[in-house]
Amino acid sequence: MYNSSAVGKSANTQAGNRFFVYEVVGLSQNTESVQNNSPIRRSGSMLITVPYDRMNQEMRRIAKMGGKIVSIRPLSEAAEAIANANGSKKNTVAEAPQAEPQSQPSKPMTQAKDKKAKAKAKAKDIPVNIYKPKNPYIGKCLSNEALVREGGSGRVQHLVFDISGGDLRYLEGQSIGIIPPGEDEKGKPHKLRLYSIASTRHGDNEDDKTVSLCVRELVYQHPETNETVYGVCSSFLCNLNSGDDVQITGPVGKEMLLPDDEEATVIMIATGTGIAPFRAFLWRMFKEKHEDYQFKGLAWLFFGIPYTANILYKEELEQLQKEFPENFRLTYAISREQQNAQGGKMYIQDRIAENAEEIWQLLQKDNTHGYICGLKGMEDGIDAGMSAVTSKQGIDWSDYQKQLKKAHRWHVETY
Ligand code: FAD
Image 1 (cartoon, helix red, strand yellow):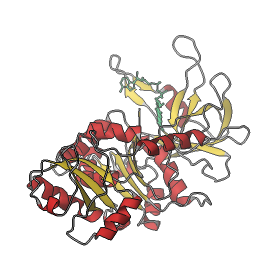
Image 2 (tube, rainbow, N blue to C red; image 1 turned 90 degrees about the vertical axis):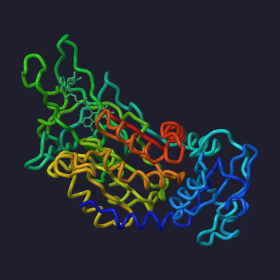
Image 3 (spheres, rainbow, N blue to C red; image 1 turned 60 degrees about the vertical axis):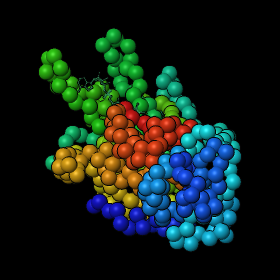
């Protein structure tokens, strides 16, 4: 189930030809790096170019010599050629291209690239609020299937709605609003609740006529009366029968969109129903066939659930993993069944901590995107795991993460 070998190899192979530039401070000019002509910048820092497969080793070497890495940047295509020409022989620290001095730590994307990405997003046709709460689309429930198997906890349903009678369209990573019928305690119509879309823009039947959701029924004991309370909208949805009407608004959301880059590395971190947008991503990447999008990159899904029986879309995920072992890596954190290194429950943050070195290396490529979706609060543990790795190199994870977010490469939707 937990497979790290096959795709890990592909990730290395894919990145094996790539180079990264470390900006290092604190190395004396007599060090080996200087003898290898690593340029000294006006700021006193030094640029060292390192092939992907030697990144860890080089980090350790620099630390041993008392150096501190203040930034890591992927080498541009042109600079890669220079580095290759200068000899990227094993154990060689090649000469880095001259760069303007920079006072800031690592920049995941240049300003020009950032601007370009923004312009691209603007130019891209992202549908938003085609149906507003005052005039919702009335869809029909086509199917409502249980996703939690026997022995699992709670109730999560996969719902498919017919949207063929209107103009509703959407992209992977967006959400729709559902207005439950009835009124709230103040006698006003219920407000809409948002749900991440679990299907691709083409829908589960690939005919552009449906939209799917993955909904957990909210059930809790009232803290004072101890009565069992069922969430208004989630229980309405989980109890739908085929043929029932549903008021739909939206779509909304630009945060969780999938990059167009077919070579991208897409790291997805989900808990529970947070799998919804990633199911859409994975279907688009691997299940559907498109003229204009043929995914050749690496998709790595971390999925946190309490029990094996709670692995939503288990068969689909494992089938894709079987079919595309070089491009899809699947890592579960099954909290009530697996143990972390300390012998405690295996939560998503433990899996991130285990793999943080590799995630960090992948994030050095400027076409790597990180996505987090699911339970509110799950970010803290993930940040802690990443921070433990970056701090070894003197890099503040929260600063780095801010830069990733600015570059539209770190995407978070928790609820
Ligand atoms: P409500 O009837 O609105 O009850 C919720 C309220 O119950 C809470 O505000 C709180 O006051 C109270 N409450 C909840 N738990 C407890 C407790 N343990 N003790 C005491 N009080 C409590 N949900 C999904 O299932 N799938 C999705 O894909 C999904 N995607 C989302 C995407 C986004 C962008 C957002 C913002 C939310 C998403 N949600 C998703 C959550 C969803 O919008 C609803 O919030 C959820 O279904 C609960 O709505 P409800 O009407 O059933 O609950």
